[in-house]
Image 1: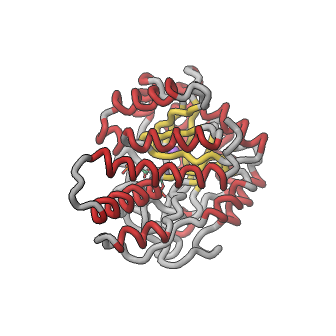
Image 2: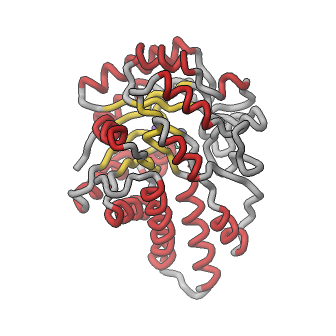
Length: 328
Ligand code: G3H
Ligand code: 13P
Ligand code: NA
Ligand code: ZN
């Protein structure tokens, strides 16, 4: 059944688990997520980005998610809009039947330019008023995703702030977070702790100076009743990078957010963990390997089946690691 984010994250907080929020763009991702959830008895958050809506079209995405709800009626599903850039964008998703929206007021309507605190409060508060009247949950964001290593915003895939950020913008302040939640009444708060979107998060396995799990603890201590969200939480599995590069890919050395660091965050209030890049890496690795090993094959279902298997295994691993398993 379709449920709101609030319902799911309240349950997650009560029982101390986290929920991966997987981005969905196509049938194969949707099936992989649901089959993994079915195997592990996990509740599901699927989220559609602006890029996904552009790729598949909003009606196709919506019906893909509704088809999942129909085929797996025993699994609770949150249909979430990722990174909305204005109240109007969120309103359209609410009208389409999304049960949760993100109003990312940390960036302007271009999705790139960092905004003032007052702007962020204003657009988020207005979105919450509209969404709550419809029984829809809202995720806000305070702070900008970006690399504490380089001071660069993670914009290599066109998602997130552009250019150079200062250190304080890249770490959400606990006092400001408390004020923001009180003024906006958001259901969940995305925080900045040094992660960024895409595959190029860290040039070395991250340590506390560049991946600030300690900041999560400070924020959670200040606002213990707020569900925290980690964006840019792909782990960038080294085994998938190796497979991609072994079969003709060229992805330079890079590191993501280790699963055990996310698990530490979940002990301190993180309830929603956004993952997109890991599914992309797994499917690309699976396609490259299959086509290279089976050069005479030309039925797309053959290699797409391989991508589904790779993504299902990855989703199962996250559901188990985050404690989502067994909570559907
Ligand atoms: O928000 C970041 C997600 O990875 C979505 O990326 O806009 O390329 O679909 P996308
Ligand atoms: P990744 O690029 O680390 O998968 O993050 C996805 C995300 O935060 C979507 O909002
Ligand atoms: Na989101
Ligand atoms: Zn994000």
